[in-house]
Image: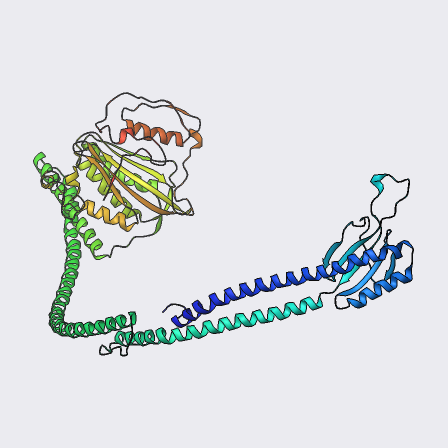
Amino acid sequence: MTKYGLRARILAYTIIPTLIIGILLAGYFSVSRYQQLEESLIRQGVNVIEPLALASELALTSRNREALNRLLSNIHRNNSPLVKSIALFDVEGRLLVTSNYHRDFDTMRLPENMPIPRITLVETGTDGIILRSPVVTDGTHMDSAWEEVSATPIGYIAMQLTNDSAMLIHYQDSFFAGLIVLLGVSLSALFGIRLIKGVSQPITDMVSAVYKIREGRLDTRVNGEFTGEMEMLKNGINAMAKSLSEYHDEMQQNIDQATSDLRETLEQIEIQNIELDMAKKRAQEAARVKTEFLANMSHELRTPLNGVIGFARQLQKTRLTSNQLDYLKTIEKSAQNLLGIINDILDFSKLEAGKLKMEQIPFSLRDTLQEVMTLLAPSAHDKGLELSLRVDAAVHDSMIGDPLRLQQVLTNLVGNAIKFTEQGNVDVRVDARPAAQPDKTALRIHVQDTGIGISDSQRRQLFQAFNQADSSISRRYGGTGLGLVITQKLVHQMAGDIELYSELGSGSVFSFTLELNRASLPLAEPLPLNELHDKTVLYLEEDNFSRRATTALLREWGVQVLHELSGGRRRLCPAGLWPQYPAQRDGAGYPPTKRT
């Protein structure tokens, strides 16, 4: 049940209302009775003091102290249960006569600057009830005006009443009121207990039966003769217990059948798990053998290929006919392509096996990027392409990371851009981004080309192993389709991500982010830039990106660029790609990219 049981609720609902009503009635009766007693006491005091004031007028006028003393003493003695003290004061507030001497008459005397009252005043305080009635005279002079013929106060009588008898009666009445309230509460408790026996005990028996049914003893039934709703509740509980017993028997049969079926299924699953475990072990062993085979074969193949490439170059230095020289160049180029494929397969197998570890060594970022651009510049110039690099001045140069893998990523992206671009530009831009920690540097590197571009449907299979955007590309341009897969895995292993934006027939932009630690010491010798400070250079360049990159570098060195050629050869890059990018350090203005 809830916080308070049914027994407590019944007792509370029967006793508390009776108790509250009884206390309210007894309190109202006691207060009303006390007020009546106080009013009766005041009336008796008024009935005593006003005749006494009239009787004291003659003696006070004649200054007969003995008569006043006898009068006050007789009145006090005749009303001793009521009167505590009587005092007579003159007009100036001086005490003339008293019936009961005590030291403090200030409580009976009128306050200063307060005139003698014309009627009897009543004052109730902690010391009792004090009545003050004026003593007036009707004596007039013959020469007095008609308006002056009136009662003139010549003093006043103060009477202090005691309320002991009234309080005694009040206490008696309060005692009887309390007895009546106690009697009412007792009768309510008696009726409540009688109601509990008729309601609470059957409910307790039913609750006990419900708990037994809940514990699983479904043969439990509620017995006894009840009336009204209790009989209906008993029949409902017994019917519920009977239904539960029938459902339990049926469910037990279903459970037994399901257990039997499950046991058979578990046996089959156990057999399948054993077979899957054996197949997993065979697959792992096959993968290990494949990895070892690829590693061994890659090393075994690269040794003779390096020999073929080396001797082909040596043969080119001898006297050869034009056809022989052409054959040797073809042999060297084919060997170089085969060596690149073998290196890609070896890197892919290491990445798949999780055995490729990233180094953490200090390196110069600009030197590392420049080495890649220098290595790939001949292939770009052979196709008549403009290859440019721009590093933002805010990019820190001394870094800690794996420069070899960074060069591999950039080489794959720039090499693909050169391979799939017939005319135009291949541009690389490095921007600084806000880093999560002050000792780190966040970079975003963009590789843009004006090549064949990639459609949305082809982009879905671009980062899959041994796949290219178009099956004809492998026949036209060559390659295994592993370059971008290896690039993506390397970027992810360096805690970065790579994105692609492309339009078919208009070019592509590959962007990837890196976050590297800063080196504490500079790794490159400072350039002698003092001699270039405040020098002026007239610079002419038709290519937009190259002009911006070179101009930014010159200004970074402190050189003033006098003139930049804004016209010239129009780039083949689409209007929606790089030419509209503003040169901002935060990288704003780049087109939306699709995360891969």
